[in-house]
Length: 317
Picture (cartoon, rainbow, N blue to C red):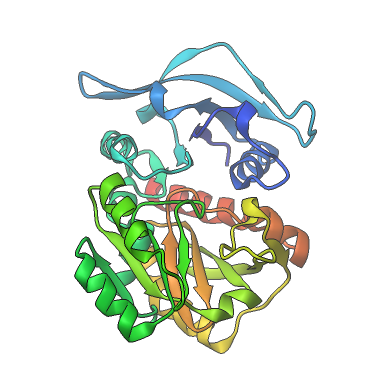
């Protein structure tokens, strides 16, 4: 099966191919004979009912110093593509949401991965609230008094932006920390939406586990261990990727959420688990493929393409 694939992502020259899951997907798609195109979200338009993008043909190679080649710009009618990979990085803002509305016009005749309607309806820190008994004690609010009451109950807390990403703006507020009031004033001043406050999970020191689910099935995991003196477990802020396997509790979490992901067309999803709790469900531009491939000697990019090709074949039938 040879597919025409448009990849909606950030600028090619801004990525680090040693850890970029979108690059891994592009390379695997090209190896399978799929014809690739690249465009950025700002190149996406709706013109008299047609979803179009100013795109370029894309060729990739695993060479750090020369890893891509783009063709001449051309206007693509995305309804003529077989697949659109929606892979730009957050923030999950109105520009991101607008892109989901535009792509909704072509899905599922053109398979958009992940389904734009359900990407829009599943912000990573909110979608998880729909599943009972698998997330840590959590408060979503702009009410400062409620935050103080939550801290009195749980003592050790984490405060973060509701629509943040990549660990930006995540604060661990320990019981003796005197900065909570100033922090809350900053959050209320910077953001119109509520903040999210959770009980701090000390198990994060042993690793924040990223689990990849493909079409609702757990396919692999990596433990991200924070650097010394760092509260965040994001790889780009110094966390170490460590080989791991799923615990019975993590198998249980995946079994609970997996059918909901599959039913919503959320083919490629990354969830974050600390200890016994699910903290986030990432459906926008999840990462982790390359680290898991390297540590476990697997090819998750191939499994993602298997799922995409199966969906396309099923729709054609």
